[in-house]
Image 1 (cartoon, rainbow, N blue to C red):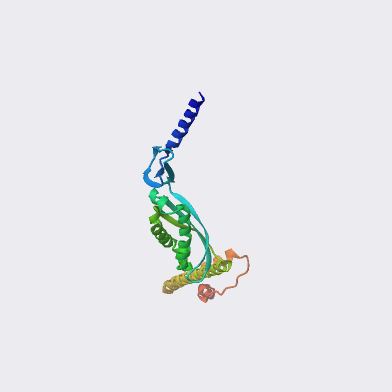
Image 2 (cartoon, rainbow, N blue to C red):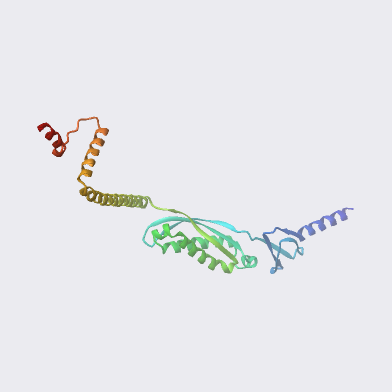
Length: 248
């Protein structure tokens, strides 16, 4: 009876070592006596006990955070830059056979490429042309990781940390630019106002009565704004009718 129990236990462990179930996004690289014989999955996988070994590889996109890197740009500005890399395994056999740890290798490749590419760019490009730099980083990392069966789909620069002195200089530059725009807008307003005043002067010069009405309208505006005594000259032409009547 004891022998049957032992036999059942051995059979159970053999079956457990034979059967593997892989998910939809997983693939299994099968080693038979140390040699790669196939890549299987997903679903039910049967292995030869004590002979076959399987290494699971995930085919999902992996989001890899690149630690902050100290970079000196082409125009000698020291910055700290970090990025994120989106990659996935396209060939499980290459990912297992060609490199010891494909995740670690891709991470180190991304760090060195980030320092190299940003070291050849100036600060203005780093701040305003990120799409161009991201595309260049993606092309270089994807080309160098292709022999490992890795596809790098996207690289994005997350944050650029500038020195305090550079932040102050950029703030002063931005303030000076805003002041320049304000002065230009004010000058344009004065120019347009002077054009309209010149046109109004031409129109008023054609009819002296219009000029007199404008003068009286200005007096009305002054009297409405301030409760004070206003002294203004009266043209003699306004008094001429009254003087003639008094003489008669």
